Length: 438
Image (tube, rainbow, N blue to C red; front, side, top):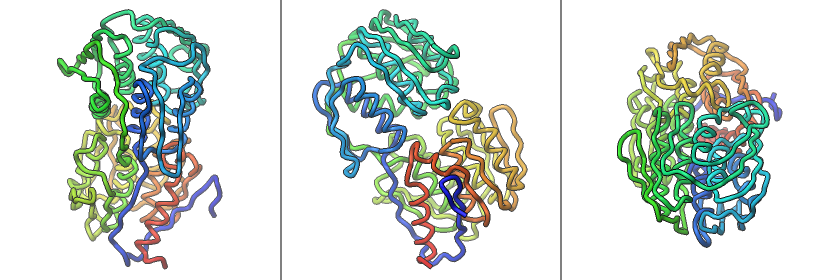
């Protein structure tokens, strides 16, 4: 039975059309970065191929609540936004970021680094549980006054801005690379050179994305070492007509589907020179026995005809959003799969380490957790209800298991609206097409 609270996944039984082209929405990470970079430019930018999801809509609504002019066409996946050179049109505002981590971290830095103003930021209960303290500490060190009106180090926040009053700041990114991305993007607001010293190394692929996009919008970043970034003074963001890449995280689910079904899936317009670190997941699938090719159309993954993968050990520290995806297909490997470098995912939308183990064990699969790693033994999954804990990646990832195993039911499938609101519609279309629309 399917309701808004439950989605039973239909296994693929007959592969009549084993070659598929799957179009996925625009990248959330790029959409949100491009929106803020445009806001910080002077004049009108046009963003094309944007993602419209719960997270990106919260980010967009915050921008509008701060007084920025926007023109939005969801059908055309386009946003036009007018920036004021880093100035915020209002001096007082309240914004609500929902469960959007990028909006929470990026806008906190943007507001705190502005020349003046008093701002209230609040979030969903889920986001209120996620850490903010390292970013708060960094923002206070540059001159902002920040008061946590609930639990210390968490939302809600009261921010009083006085501009960037120092030329050096340190930030710990062990819990989230978004803390560093937020500071990097906001740095040009000072008008002077700013040095950022970094502790930790979480999610550096996302930092690379941030730096490349800042350069696309006209601001250079000098990386003096692995732990030090320098943003020279006197720089300003340019306005652009900017094309957002397809979302590599969304693409990865369909590449994984190809891996366990022995079919071919191509995602158009997404290549290995992407800004997004999650394209690395396709190379992981190659190590597991898939054929992977970067074609003129896009990256194509073809799974082994047997549907049996090779077990591997892989450090997913830099593309950890796909740890759940790999865990969901790991039981179909002939030897164990070990995923390392993912301890930080305990502090995301859910405790993802615990949730991976919980759901695999519910399917009868043996799992071992140890520190920042998880080891998954091969096995034959059995029917189970997948507990999503309001986490979109748990819903999307474990739906893949259900394309091989009868009786996999996803609880609260609607949580996918956070990043990919049509996920199950697209998955159904793909599985029906593979079966020849039986």
